[in-house]
Length: 102
Image 1: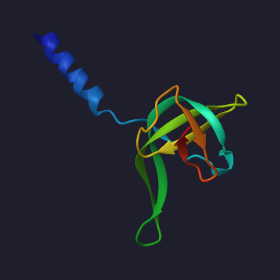
Image 2: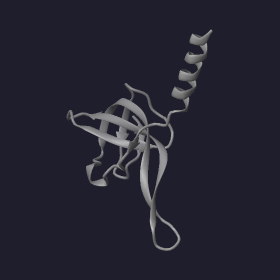
Image 3: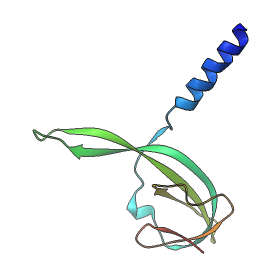
C-alpha cells in the first residue's frame, strides 16, 4: 500500500513539473528556408517587461521550441505558442520567424 501512495506522489509531482526555462531566440539566427521538424520541446522563455517605477522583472511564458533540420544540414529553432507540428513534418521557415506547413 505504501508503494502505491509513493508512486502516486511521484506521478503528481512529475505532472506538475514546469518545463525548463530557456533564453529567447536571437532574430539574427533565423534564416528562411525549408526543413524537417526534428523535435518539439515545451520550454518557458524569460522576457524582461517594464514594471511600474521603471524597474524590470523577468516573466516566463510557456512556448514550444521547434528544432528544424534545414536542407543544407544546419539546425534552426523557432518558438511557437501551440504544438502545431510533429517530428518528421516538412515546414517552411519565413523571414518573419513563422513556421508554416510545406
